[in-house]
Amino acid sequence: MKSTRRAMLAAVMVTSLLALCVGSISSAAAKPGSAHAAKAVTISVASLIPGSSDAATQQFNARVAQFEKANPNIKITPVEYQWTGPTFAAKLAAGTLPTVFEVPFTDARTLGDNGQLADLTAEAKALPYFSKYNPAVIAEGTDSKGRIVALPKGAYAQALHYNRRLFREAGLDPNKPPATWAQVRAYAKQIAQKTGKAGYAEMGKDDNTAGWILTTLVYALGGRMEVGRGTSAKATLNNPKAVTALNMLKKMRWTDNSMGSNFDYGWSDINQAFAAGTVGMYISGSDVYTNLVSASNIDPSIYGLAPIPLAAKAKKAGVLGGGTLAGVRPDANAAQRAAAVKWIDFFYEQPLINKAQAIRNAQTLVAGKQPVGVPALPLFNKAQYDLANTWIKPFINVPLAQMKPFTSGIFKQTLIPEPSASTQSVYHSLDAAVESVLTDKNADVAQLLQAANSTAQAAISAGK
Image 1 (spheres, rainbow, N blue to C red):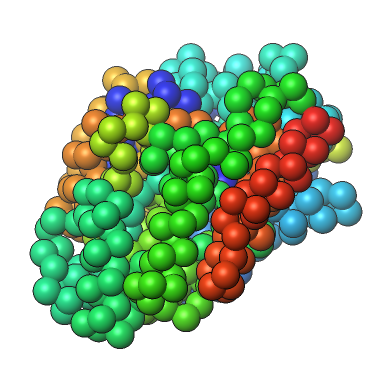
Image 2 (image 1 turned 180 degrees about the vertical axis):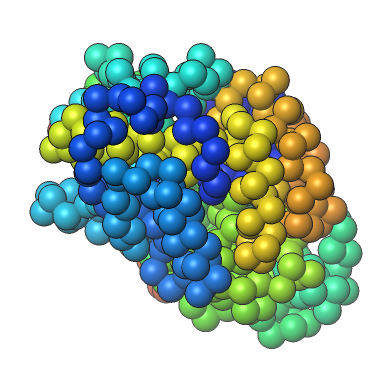
């Protein structure tokens, strides 16, 4: 669950967001003659999610070796890492996070304000490309005091992922994905009846993902989950569009019987189910194809990507957007901070800003059978975005033609940031409502949303 701003609306990034090869590490802190270069330092870094393929693991280790070769005084210790609300909170409290870790857009500013991220302002502003950052993106890593506490890894818009093979088996045209929610419901029912698979699956896990996806639906219908900012914000989880969204899921589940039998999907396992061919459609970030390849071994021929359907008559309808940033532990010393920014520069940013790095990255990704060209949103300005895409064009290996509904349609959609106040608490308060609707035929939607609203308001008022 991540966040972004309307300034990202103009473009879709068609480039890999994973940095790989090292040439000139451009941070001022990365220069061999800098103050920290002479002294050996070890940092731990977030690597891959648990369960990633051997090929992806080998590729990551190759990146580490390349970095260490160019920076012989820095030792990198990879740590398996996957962000979820509960596990992140526990690791943060226990002090067990790696030196460099990833956080959603929704969390970085609050963590910075709470002193739970290192101040990277000096190191970040020394990067020669700092002025090229998309202002809306770098703002997500800037706290209320103007300190830069995280640098962007990637950004995305929510999208509809669909199985082209199941579409064909159900008698649907895979080149014409649903453009309305009525069509989503009808297609899901047809897929379920014709193939026996889940026509549409919903993340229902109570780790904030259920609330995240429900919020996506509500945005698409024109609703909002809160108004205002900070502790004075007002929760509006019980708005009419939220009632409509939950009732739609209830009908798909109980009337249409089009959602299969698993109602406890989280982010990773719904990806696995989709790659295994048991899910016709689901909603997640536009950049999920990378995980479908690296962790779930998807057959590219089944994959389709389309924009989220927006309610035609709802003026406020929009697509939820988000992203991920890389932050550093607040107890990192000066040498560790400098090394951490070198790693962030190398691993996340260089392929988007340096032609040689971009080409080497793309070549190595292709050699490792990893995706190049996954749709995302730009971290840097439009000119840099266009330039970077020309660098990697010969190496793009994702099925772009099957993603065309999204890459062309996203330009017509308004991107809406996630709820800014107590984001994860707002999502978590909605988890139970989604779970109840999917598991209890007699669930009272209005009552569930009212309870969720009260819980969310308490969290917002407390600044949690």
